[in-house]
Image 1 (spheres, rainbow, N blue to C red):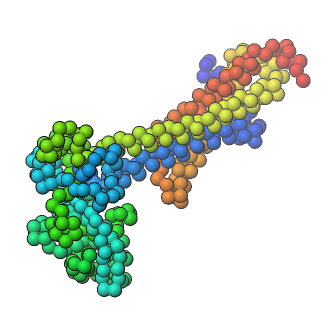
Image 2: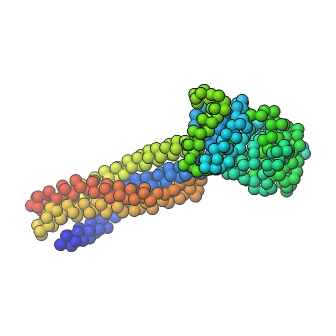
Image 3: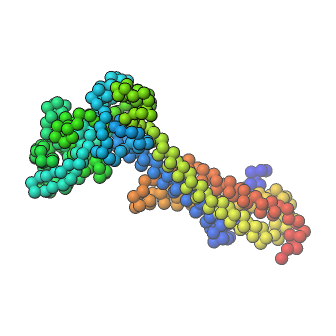
Length: 408
């Protein structure tokens, strides 16, 4: 009996919607826009979060950077290290290595300076990076052509250089293979042994990499280091490793606490947590703003359904005279409101997914549609129809049959 009553309500609702196609479409439009906005904006928020994670991963996996100088917040990348007096020593590097393979995978120093590069009659300015052989693995940045310099090059202070992709474009005419060619860095001849892959970063792609020992001899004259790159064994041990590094270097530098430290450890996890928190808050804000249009759409449904009750007062009176109960009338109008809302939700889902795809395909924006956001938006559309269709349905069910039959 209940199934028969529901089936009758469903068929009558569909006939009513079909007989007022334009009005039903306009009624559902608010829900369409709301659902589409929620899905598209959440997808863009998810895409932004993924982009942040990929950007951090491109710096290296399980990365900790030990900087010389006073702490400067949680930034993983300090743009200017040339003006900072190096304070990190070989003893500090050996202390970090001594933590063993359970905590540390690789350690390598890094120092940077601005250098003048020359090949033939062509000049350019680049960032000269002095580092060790583990740099490509730690920073997830590998040669595309040729090779990185070797440990023998570091031990013998060889004047070999690996150049960034932008340096290759700026310095060498088209058609020339730079591997094996010699360039001058601050007047000193260096042999090109490799070209780094394109990173998409103006800083990395416009850098050249030489052995740290060569850098100390010809560029800085310093024995200390501005930065030490550390790769942890896993993300689970990164915070323990950070604590161990801080305590170890404090002992080496004979300093009591990090409040007086002349170095700072930047942890990739800290920046990732911060950025994830920002993007999640941003996504929630966007979704909340978009959800407002769903509320507006629900008000539109209530308004049209109230108009529909008024228009169909005589029809309601006839149905009641033929034996329909107040519950039957209420069920019919509730079903009609929910169907309009769900149809709007389905179309809105398609529009939202399409908008997210279009933003990624043609707008160059990262987007990832979430199944959770689709399910929530569709569920919210159902609730909107149920809630805002409730009052008109209740009002229809409370009409007096005699008065309804007399209504013109």
